[in-house]
Length: 251
Image (cartoon, rainbow, N blue to C red):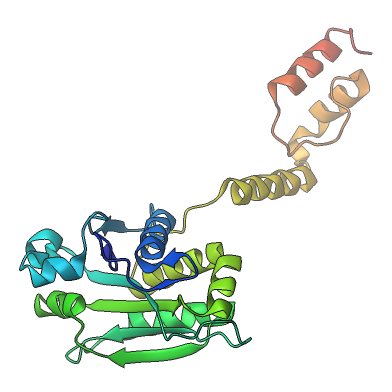
């Protein structure tokens, strides 16, 4: 999978502004973290963050800069605005747009659906020929414009801030799974450690084989090995202790 991420606005255009926050800043932060979350799972490129894709479209430079044809899909990130103002206890939610000629809406639906369990109301997939995604679609590339949540709604942004890491992970997982990534999700250090600890416990609990009975009896009688963990791996430290015992030093 080869995905192009486009952070909306920027290059002098702040996008939506509310309570000291700018849409252009939020889209760039999110795009960078989604790209990182997809690292090792697919090839992800980002539209130059010092540029504004819509301004490039207006100037006739978009397709040259983006080179859409080399990608399997395009995801343009935005934040919505509705002049909601103060929080009213009701998040406004997430919605996605595809063009009027788009035949495949799986990615758009998956992205919205991924944020719904986190508390963002799913406003669904809509059709609108927004300039950037329409340009990508004309080159035969599926494209989605995602309005992550409402930047000018206090409830949306409080939820977004509180669950930011989950938002990043949810969007990355939805993109990878929907676009047909076939590899394995990168394993974290914690997951690897837990897997190895479980593996060592299972090995240690396994009964010893009959063919080693005589050798085991000799080791146990002589005090060379006496912990019964015959299925476990032997560390250099444990080997040193066994040799020390064999030499009669540790008895």
